[in-house]
Length: 171
Image 1: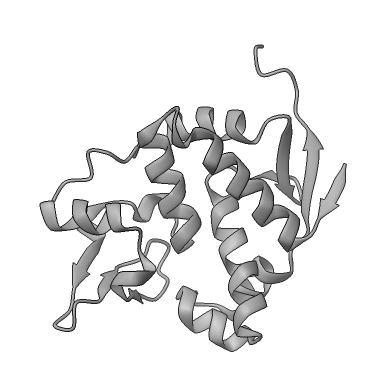
Image 2 (image 1 turned 135 degrees about the vertical axis):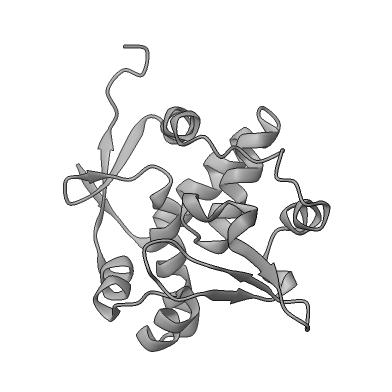
């Protein structure tokens, strides 16, 4: 078991996303969206999204958190195009599929916070940590990410991510 830094986690995720870019377009689009936005997997649903008069994108969150606003340049171009077309057919919204693919992307390691294995949520943890490095303010990250409780923001920013050697994925 190894505790990895925010920089190491980001590097692992970028390498994993780049590995699947050519192999699986749908998985790439989904992971790139989660990586870029820090949204929960359940928020990858057009019913949760709208656009305001200035062209900003607004997501109605899950888990009773606060809505979040993204400027167009904060979202992947592919997502913006799919939003305008009203169809996310090139995004995988099956948690079963993602729970199978993401561990394969991250192999030979699994990642944990405490005893909880991170699969799609690893992108959310990473986004909080990366924003904190840039914004240097817990309050700014809290507002940007739309968490209702400050304690959740602190958890995402400061939780230790453990890297553990994976079991054989062929089992």
